[in-house]
Structures are given as C-alpha cells and as structure tokens.
Image (cartoon, rainbow, N blue to C red; front, side):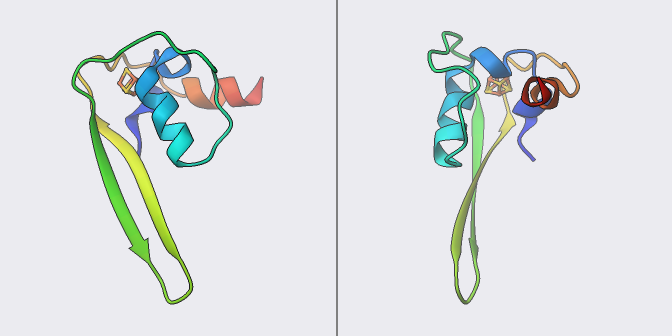
Length: 77
Ligand code: SF4
C-alpha cells in the first residue's frame, strides 16, 4: 500500500502527483510544490489472462510525516 495516503504532504507533493498520473486518478492538486527527499517507489506488474495492471506505490520516503487518513479526508470533502 502507498504510504502517501497517510502523509501530511499528500496534497502538495510532486511525487504523489506522479503516482496519481500513473494510476490515471484525478489530481488532488494540479501544481504541487513540495519535493520529497528520497521517495522509494515500488512498481508491481500484475498479469492475468485478460489484463496487465501496473501498480505504483511509495513504500519509503524521508519526507513522510504521519497524518493518518489525510488522503481519505481530502477525497470526502
Ligand atoms: S510519503 Fe513522501 S512521496 Fe508520499 S506524499 Fe509524503 S512526502 Fe510525498
């Protein structure tokens, strides 16, 4: 699971912007300004008979600041 969903910076982070783009999701912010330190992105390729899915998750990041559920709260408002 992507740690960004519980990070204080999620709505102003350039790396999370890229993750949203890879997932073809609506951006929380069209012009994020924060550049995180050393994010580590895990890319999983999930292949089935009919489909090929690529899943991108930030699994480590020096700039992570815990804010449980921030992403969910932003999506509910
Ligand atoms: S964990 Fe890192 S990459 Fe993810 S939103 Fe926070 S600062 Fe950005």
